[in-house]
Image (cartoon, rainbow, N blue to C red; front, side):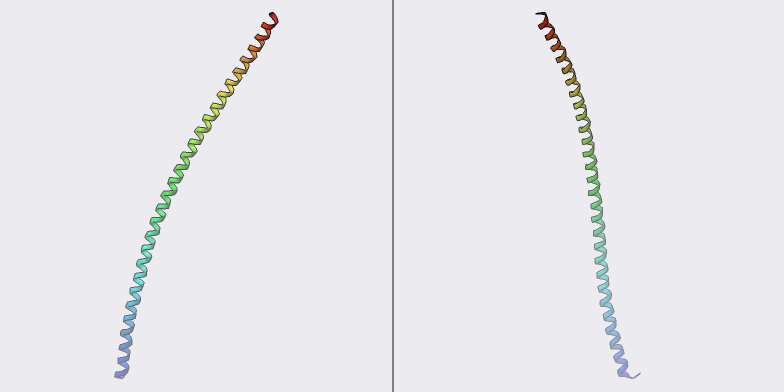
Length: 105
């Protein structure tokens, strides 16, 4: 190979090495950015999981409160019904007594 061709090959080789270094540097930068995005995504997913867990806990708490309210309401309704029946019987008894007293007077 002559001197001129050899010189051209060396020149192309150096340009190729420079280009390879630039491309490798860009790939390294892209890799670092992807790593950063991956870590950020993992952190966001972790945060989402925590928030969802908190929401579930709140929902369970609300469900328990609703169950207590429902039980209390049923107990209240039962007590009111019982009191109403007792009052109804007392009113009926009093009405009979009043009628009896009216008959005897």
